[in-house]
Length: 293
Image 1: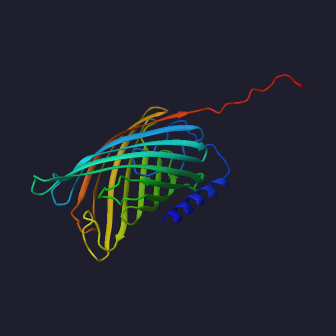
Image 2: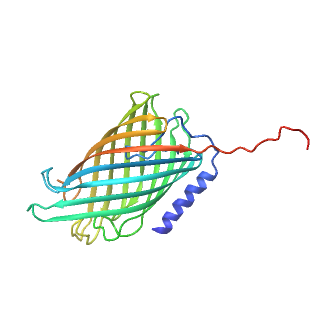
Image 3: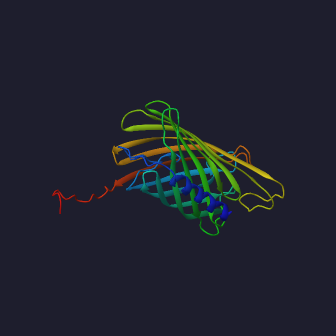
């Protein structure tokens, strides 16, 4: 698995090294928040951008919304534009969920803290009917002993696509593979609308699918046969531009296992976030006005 991921990183770097440089810095901040879809473009050269957010979520393993897992999740992302069409990201995410069992007196707690390194590049710049296409690679390091995830390095690789349908309407999508307890297909489909120069709204569908085999952990259940998992979700949100470099956002979503040993499991969440960027101008050498020596 590690050799495969190294090859993906090498392919990403090779593709980007052959690209012609074109400016990608925009007048207003372009943030991945509040949706799950990653942008196919980068922040631009010499840009430092922060994206932070927190969610409250609740899920259930039965038909009642008021029981099951509940708790908070948070993520902080630092995006560094090292070239016009290439950036690196550093992330830290934290989750603390408690489980209320059906007997209402025994609780379990799930806690996860992981760090990740990401590399993102823009391969094709949008031009009329041609969409923007980007590549995204990530390596994350989860906390040991977390029952919801495997206790090892988790790679992820995505193809990022963006198409401007109209001046205010954009369709975006991500598709690729990640590693949870097994190789997992991950996808998103996002429709965003700029309702004003300062306010944007979006509606998004995203999900994961994987097949697990053999004797699984307690979280997945125990079964010697193949188990399919498909977890689709729908969410939406609004972002507000306070300044050209500062954005606030709110979001919410719902999900339900459609293919799973626990088909009744569903969840909902609400969240808020903030994105802020700083641009460092390129220093220019002073030219000598005098001619000759």
